[in-house]
Length: 455
Image 1 (cartoon, rainbow, N blue to C red):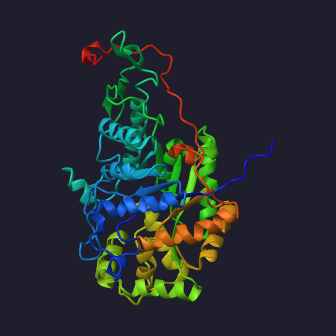
Image 2: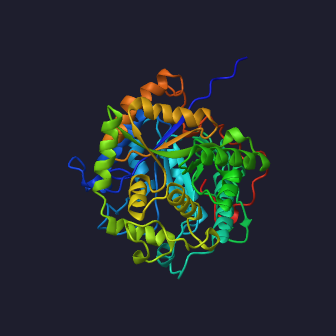
Image 3: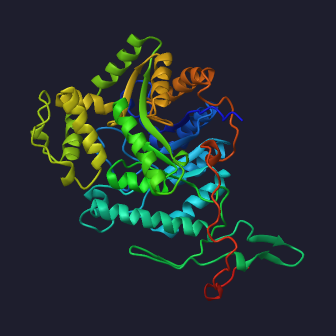
């Protein structure tokens, strides 16, 4: 039997008026879009019209950057997803949530609830949250060490998955005649006791349509890759060159196999910022117009924080200083720090030029061209063993997503690289992943009487 042809997975990474930091300044952009649910519902329906696998929202429990620079206010993404779920039918819905500044029970409940509300379309992007500003919002003077954050994240995911399995799929009987709603023997406490958490359970939400909401991960440090190999089912990553993307792809697939998992069970999706024009010259002009709207004084301050320098140490028309901190000295966002420094060194960019390169996608690959050229770029990496698909990051929203869906997706479909119709109803189904079995199925339920039966 001939195996099915491998096809792309495409996720739309949505961010207010777009990923380019100056997108909000364009005449057609709505600078208040970040708090308008109608804006995000329209984007989600557009992505669904293109048969994309999913949409995704980044998040952090801190006000990011200067409010003078770009729209900074964000709605809490799991709340946002419930409103989007009601306006869509098939598109997967992924939200970011931190394992450093949440607790497993509340977060497991929240994502199980979104999975129920959406009919099985929820995904959780696991982050460990770098930076002292976030820590201070939770009564802590500084972030925990990088290794500690990832150690906590691994245990956090383990507890969440145990909680999602604390109900058997058939625990609800709904027997009106006998007056029995549920079977206590099919719901169990988890009695987790670990280094970071002690959680009894069970969850107060039945096992959701997907069993486990999809687990996504976005860190590319050594600890991040090890966490992904153990738990992630999709990985959002950033690479500037084909070689770097190929190295990351093969490395993470090998780590996944070494962790005892099928490497096909983890989908690697590099970010791409497509600037699309009817001609290559038009696309380059659009990119240039956006870059010219960047206010370099704001961008330099952000770059200085990332590099652990003072802004005055980064003259705009000079290259980066030679004596930057090493990656070993960076406790937060290690992989992004390395990507930025390597990009600047490799292409001998001045600070001003580097700001322009980062303004569109914060280190993700920016590609300017016609719809055919964008499709070619996606196909090249896909066939070269660098990606299972892509995290599409339109520089301007909604127009950038609309152009991608209406002009690039049809080309990928004509080449047989992408679906023409949804064949599944769940996010796991879109990614070709099985519904996980319940780790406790068939085992005797632990005593629940001390917490009281709701049945």
